[in-house]
Length: 287
Length: 245
Image (cartoon, rainbow over all chains, first blue to last red; front, side, top):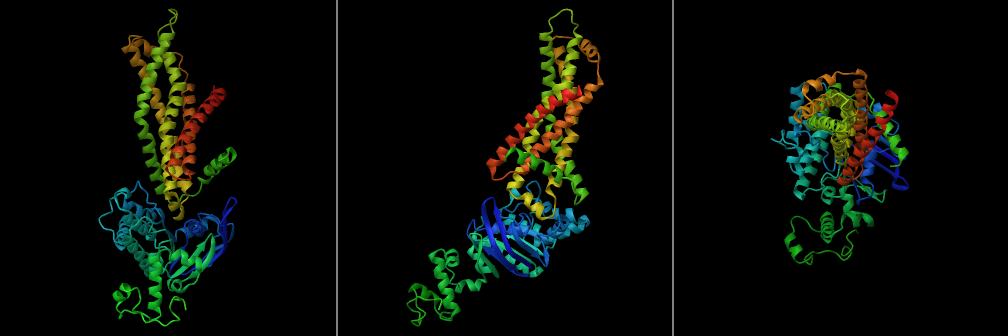
């Protein structure tokens, strides 16, 4: 579990994060969402210690990162895996060497044992026959998967992902989301994901923190989002008409007004006229 | 960055390099890799400029020494000392500031911009130690060797130009080479090589390591690294000559 306690962070005169508090739960995919420039990346970089917080504390399973000495931080960082927005693979190394790098640096394992682990994690992220390719020779989705493999090779307790879906098509994004979610469950790790991808939010958002202009505006689960009346959150999440319609449908579905047995095609065709909804529900889906 | 914050940042980077390595074997590998990159990568250009610098030096010296009283051996003598004292260490290092300096700044800048340095930091690796220290050590090992090579090839270039151009025979040139030889000059040349090697590698690493932005900033950092290294080399050249000769 990672606790964020009253964290504030600024650069020069500009305050990026203001008094943010949250709890990132173990065994769950914790999402930090918000528009570009809302402070998601800064918060995540504060959490991994790349930025020092101005005020407040970051606590990893009872141990305060803020008060740690450099050696303690080094030890903690070996329990952290991170997937970067641009994958951050070492371009001079092959896929295999990229994934093996943390093992070479931090273990005294034999070459055979290291290779066994490397092949295990590459299998886990569904990458085969790419061991000897360089990052420049593989696709964006594959790079993300190599990044995940490198992040989990040392079996971390905490996994951080910064915009894991940026630059990927929706289908590949789903694969990456699913993979991160499965790895979180399999290894019972604390996963923190920065995203503004709504598919990710609705697919894997078990604990969601919404930042707006550096402040925590909302916290909840993906189910809570459907029923939330938080204006800024709704504007952000359901930005398009299509998404707003999808939300209404989900709400009706959740209330049992429509279900799988009904003819959804008919409802979509007649714009909802065939729905038998009592007057109180019409135009007020939150009720 | 202002002048004082640049100096402060540079000192902090140098200080930050000296921590206990996470894994000595990996550091050794990186040192060897950098030595090959810096040393072998610059071998060709150093060889070419050294031969021509010696050759040009011989031709121009003979052009200026018109007095019949001066023996022809003097040409070899002047070529030898000019190459050892100035051309090999200073000229070669200025060229290396361009070749190695831009390469180091570009490599580290790219790693910074593409978050590879952050990825190493998150793993718990001291990036100043792992990325910068091996580059500086590799430069300190290989650049003086390149300067020694430049001294030899420069003198040989003078010999070649002298004989091919009919300026003086190889026998006279060889006689001139051993006249009034002062071994201190070689040590002076090497002291300069070590100083310049440190300047080139550390200044370029500093500018590359602290890049902020994108591709444009990487280019700017490389240019700044080369210009700053060249100015510092010339400044250090004067200081060393003033105090050591």
